[in-house]
Length: 298
Image (tube, rainbow, N blue to C red; front, side, top):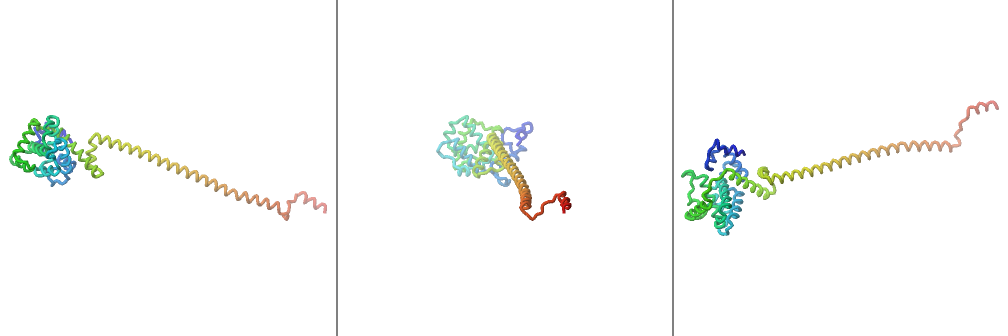
């Protein structure tokens, strides 16, 4: 995704994320969120809630950020608030940016507040900052209180304490927003792949964007290539040995066949000579001179 073209301030002047939906790359971002945050590719399904993998990660992050055992955030409560308050994935990511900001600026605040209250109030502030542009889109504190099962006065107090703790610093740079998005995508890809026992194409694309995973997969690929080359070399050597062995055996069989053909002829000739010498009835050869003089003496 081309973030430079997406956030080109020469073309689009904006001061916060309220104008984000009107940028030309919004549709691409929506498709990315649906695919990589496990919302599904069905465009009829609204993004006004948190997917199950995102909810799991949110619960873990808020529990670690606010370790107080009082009103510890549970998945059921987080899913209920997200569904009732229509929390979008962008609001979720912006809230995580605020939590990271509080870790550096005011860690004492995170030690005092419960994880359930922190989840509710951070989501409320992020949603207000993103979407409250008019009366039609406003969600009042009493509605957030009903979603979080708190009274309005408690919600108002939590909101003021949160804003004072973060020093009313709600504006977020796009790079910080997309850093959180990348971390969410990586965590979800890792967990879902490990849970299933295999990774989808989208999961691998997400993981390859991370340096550590890219280096690890590259090392695995190189090791696999070396092992394959060694196995191929051993195979070729074995084939060459088999061919050489078969050739030698063939030559030996030919040599033995030639010897077996010559041996009967030699045996036949020797037997014939022995038979001729031992047979007395066989007339001896008469010298021509002897036959001539024998006539004279008769």
